[in-house]
Image 1 (spheres, rainbow, N blue to C red):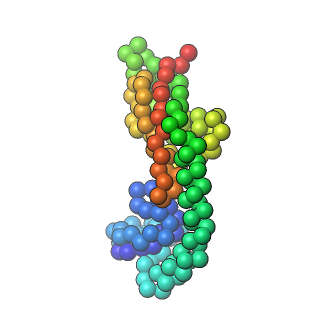
Image 2: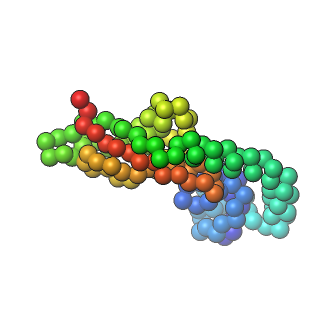
Image 3: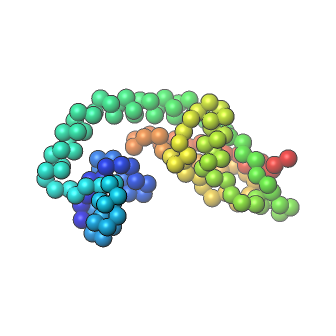
Length: 147
């Protein structure tokens, strides 16, 4: 079943993308929740017209995302975690902690747009920040023992 996404959905696609999903997922979840519409000829024409009209705004959003990525640059974020004697951390490092650390440095990013690699011990890890459909940036996380 082909559908047109109305909002960004992680792992599936971005707004105005036409994607193919299983019929039950589209019919029973995406369409009733308002996340997608059926990809028939009428809806495709409407979406194409909306894309054409919003192209200027989309270009500005992309430039803003690139500016945010440039401001992050090669920034290294220190996150404190409670560590056992073996060097393994208790709990996990979450995207919320990364978002809070970025906000402390003056960069405001929604936590839902951050994906953190699995962190099991003290060390250096990466987090991917999805700023825009075309702009993804990697942030280095330095996990240090809490004092």
